[in-house]
Image (cartoon, rainbow, N blue to C red; front, side, top):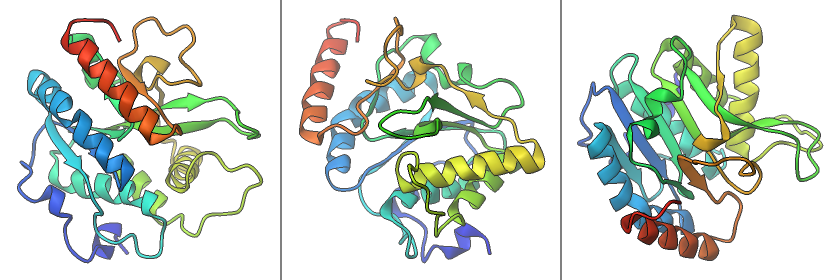
Amino acid sequence: MDAIADMTKPEAVLMGIPREQPKYLCQHGIGEHAELITLVEGWHAAWCVRHKYVYVPSYARTAQAHGRPAYFEKIQLLLKLCTLAAENALIVYLDADCLIVRTGPESDFENALLEGVPVGMNFMPPHRGSQFGHFNSGVIVIRNTEKARVWLQRAWYMWPLPKLEHPPGAYDELALNLALWAEYKEHGMGFVRLPAKWNCWAINEKGVDAPIVRAWHGMDKRIVRRRMAEVIVGLGKGQPA
């Protein structure tokens, strides 16, 4: 079954979104995370105008995740957006606790993917007791191709997930990682390990002189909100992030 067919109705957030566009930037947040999007949407909307992206902020629940944790709504949103976007369109996903901190041409996510490679995420070495490194799904760069859509479909149907002693990240992140490795092993799907500047946070920020996306993954949302607000004010004054 197609994962899109699982949805009871199209997500309200995608109604009215321009179709067949070449570049999209989307974010999704629930509860406290939704509040973070309301904080950054003005900045990100302006960035999108500058770089000719369609901005797609999602503040609330999308279609039901059909017995899966709410985290899986990220995968649903990306799948649905893939059906609206042009073939080979660039689709960028940022978690609600992410903020683009540069506005020049170097900040365009077109620079993040290699030609012919459909997916890019930052790879995290083992940490916090985990035995395994994994791709962090806080920032996902996708080229809208059949391979990318198959990967997302496969991640959706990873539920229920296998039990691991130290699973990486949240449920959606584990599903996306397992599907990525499976597609790589079975079909040779290519992917890019994005440099830390595209998803820069406490775990990997050492040595990153010019971050493009700052993130505050896993932190108390009250602290995240305060720090994001401070950075946005600084950016507005031309101060480096």
